[in-house]
Amino acid sequence: MQVAFYQSESEQPHPGRARAIIKAHPEVRELMVRNPWTALIAVSILLVQTALAFGMGELGFGYWWLSLTDRLLRWRVRQSC
Image 1: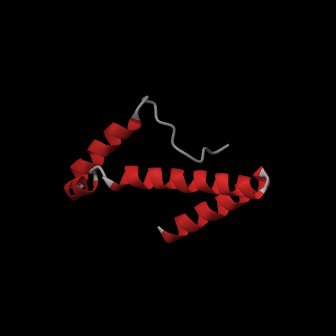
Image 2: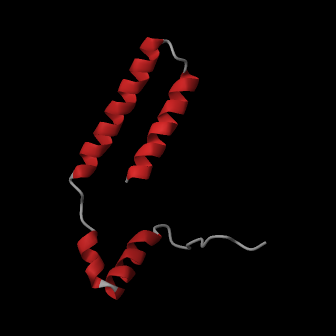
């Protein structure tokens, strides 16, 4: 059976791969920076999901509807990014 992915022998292949990419393409270094918006986006998503859960619980919807609404919301957010 043919393997569909590469299994690395090292425990952490990412640092070596990042160094190889930077060596081959130094301009990529500009893209490897911390994004200050990440924490705000994560907290915002957490607050929206918590508010949805609370709101749907107050309206008497069960967990099935909460799960469906959450998936639809996440799909919509991913489509807009």
